[in-house]
Image (cartoon, rainbow over all chains, first blue to last red; front, side):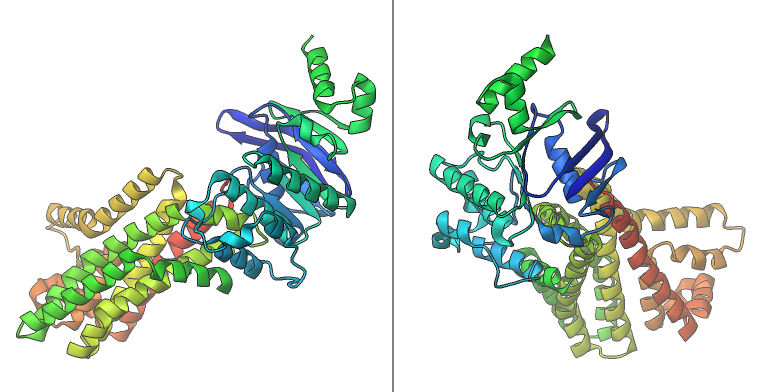
Amino acid sequence: MITAKNITKQFGKLKALDNVSVSFAKGECIALLGPNGSGKTTLIKALLGMVVPDSGTIHFAGQDIANKWRYRNQIGYMPQIGRYPENMTIAHVIDMMKDIRKADSGKHDEDLIESFGLKRMMDKRMRTLSGGTTQKVSASLAFLFNPDVLILDEPTAGLDPLSSELLKQKIIKEKQNGKLILITSHILSELDDLITEVFYMQEGRLLFHKKLSALKEETGEIKLSKAIAKIMSVKAV
Amino acid sequence: MKKILKYVIVDIVQNRIVIIYTLLLLIISLSVFNLESNSAKGLLSLLNIILIIVPLICIIFSTIYIYNSSEFIELLVSQPLKRRTIWASIFSGLAISLSLAFFIGAGIPLLLYNADATGFMMIAMGLFLTVVFVSIAMLAAGLTRDKAKGIGLSILLWLFFSLIFDALVLFLLFQFQDYPLERLMVFFSFFNPIDLSRIQILLHMDISALMGYTGAVFREFFGNSMGIMLSFAGLTIWIFMPLLFSLKKFKAKDL
């Protein structure tokens, strides 16, 4: 579904992405892991066309995405820190997004808006919302249009346990619908029952990209967190 | 494009600063026409105000607005929209709402008190200046990420076009006063949208006689319909050049 070839991106002296090549297939749920500043968010933004790579190409469903925009109809993106126009209410933001992406109206997936209880605070302004509520709005918007690809940048950061469980259930449901899901997260324990593949980055480079089952087999661990820790300690030695 | 434009215009029109700007222009133009017994005198005072205040407010308000919409822009860029559509919508939104403010604040009084060729020319030039300075603001805001730098740059640009440019031209004029520079002055005026507007309006006010030989050369060049067309063309270039350049920057910008 998504293939990137030799992506390099430099911010000043910092090489955020260093010759990264990946291929993500439909129906997989992939965890993008790596320490802070390893280039996960930059990679995601490059897939979305928000960051323009210095070199390399990205193909989405067989099409080069450089200067294209229509492909984003098939992507739902939940940013790490959702930033919204401050004076708009939740209802305004949702209506505006529906207005922008009205390709197939009537098929809006409002599950998350319901289950997060956002209906009750539709007329609150974005600037008055707490960090967690803003995250809920971001998550609801990402799922709203039933996209084929979901890109979730630290989806559960700032959510209370109940809401993050709701979000997890929703992710599992969409995975079963055969969607491609990319998740970055630092909370490995909650990824265990979600993901099928692990994509590990460090200092802008791809360290490994493996099936979760293969990774567990290799390390002999059942938990993702232990497996990653084991691999990292081997690499360090 | 229409969808985003709608949200931008609704957002700007509700903005308190734009309402104050409209009222300020309205108060100034009404008082200028009511205080002066002779409407030609009122027109001259209004001219100076328009040439200073309109560019200043337009460039600063637009620059700040663009920086304050960075969240909005970020949200839109991750959606299935062309970057050109986003940028063009913001530009059109600013240009349309500020032009509307100018038309209500200065255009309507002009039509009421001085609805002749001079009045129309003044309205046209005010609208042109509004759009030109919105476009220059897009460029200033597109060049740098830092809000303080961007606003500083736009103040400098305003200062350049309203004061420094004229000072430089005067300096040149005095340095080379032994040479016939009048035709060169016509050429120079195309480098400053404020000068272009000023000359066009002054020529319509029949006071170009006060400007000596240079005034006569200006009259010869700008006074006919060809000259008017040329200055309109010059101002149109002033709208599109900064806008296209800033668009090029925005297309390659990382968000």
